[in-house]
Structures are given as C-alpha cells and as structure tokens.
Length: 238
Image (cartoon, rainbow, N blue to C red; front, top):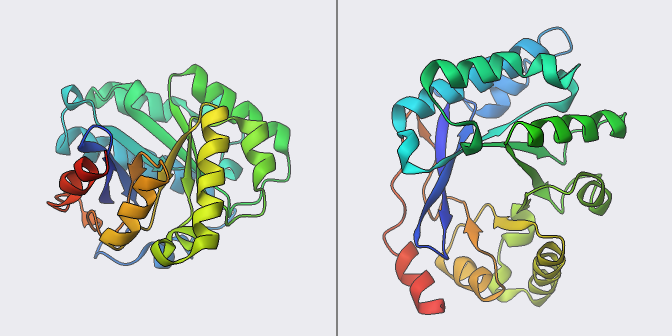
C-alpha cells in the first residue's frame, strides 16, 4: 500500500490519507488490479482493507484524528454484515477507530443491483464509517448515485480539476457541484490537484478538501509530507 495525504484547507492541516494498492515491488495499481477477477475479487478486497488498516495503525496514531480512506469493490461484497467481519476484526486487533475509516466507491465500477449497493452503504454508515463517492463526474452513474446513496463526501474527478484555473467551463461545473453538495450536506474533495493555480481556484470556488501530486505524492508504506505552501495559500484565500 502507498499512502497519499488529503489536505483540509479550512483548518490548515492534513485531514487523512488514502491507501492506494501497489505491488510488492512498488508496481502500479493498474498492474495489480489487472490480475483481479471473479475468482479472487472477494479475497483481494478483504486483504487490501486489512493491510491498509494495519499499516495506518502503525503510521499514524488514532489520537491524531486522521482518517484512513480505502477504496472498496461493491461487487466483492456479497452480504454487507458478513463481509465486514474481517474489517472490524482488523480494526479491533490494531486499535484503529472505526469512525476514522472512509470507504470510497468509485463511479467507474458498474453495479447491476442498485438496491444491493444502497444496502452496503447503509450498513457501512451504521457501523460509523464515512462513505465517499470517488471520481465524481467521470463515471456512468453520475447524479443518480449521489441521490440514491447520499454519501458523506464526493471526490471531484481529476478531469474536471485539470487546468481549472484557466477554464471557465470547468469552474462553472465545479461550482455547481459545490452548491449542490452543500444543499445535500455532502463534503466536496478535489482530487488530482497538480498546481498551485488549480488549488487557489478551487479554494475560491468553495472546495474544502484536497488531494493530488501538488500536495504530496503516494508513498509506499509511509506518509508523504504536504507541500509547505498548502497552508499559506489557504490562509491567503480565507
């Protein structure tokens, strides 16, 4: 697992870290995910969760109030309660608080049974987890997934973020997402931020949480420091 920081501009601090799958030699996520199939999907999903929780407990203490964000595969969850047993056991074993766990559902994954997905989200929320929709604005589900699931957090896809400082169309779309999310009491996170200009523009549009190479690159089984200007730019925009 590699870890990438998520920055909270409103409070000028790291909000949490996303766990990103990597190969044993640091191979890319795509090289690993390309080996996942119907036979091993469940075991892979379970192993990734447990490994992420174990590493997070070692890398940042629970008292730091940092979140651990984990991607999950809804098609690997055959029954929400049963499939959570290993996750809950791993958290209890290493003393990682359940309230610090964030589960991200990517819009790229097709789910043929929407009712099953709703049941997963409801059970995860009942356990105290934060629920997030990843790659918002890029997947096939779009607004319907936002309405059906009512997640706690949406991550704006990097395609909408790239070059937003010079693109009025992207600015208009992101601002509409921010307003809509505020109405639904959903927190917005912009991912894939690569320049200070993108960051400053997104701040002006009201985005509170950020992730991307400009803030810190994914680091294998370690925490990446956040760009030293992250707090300075946020303070200037406030």
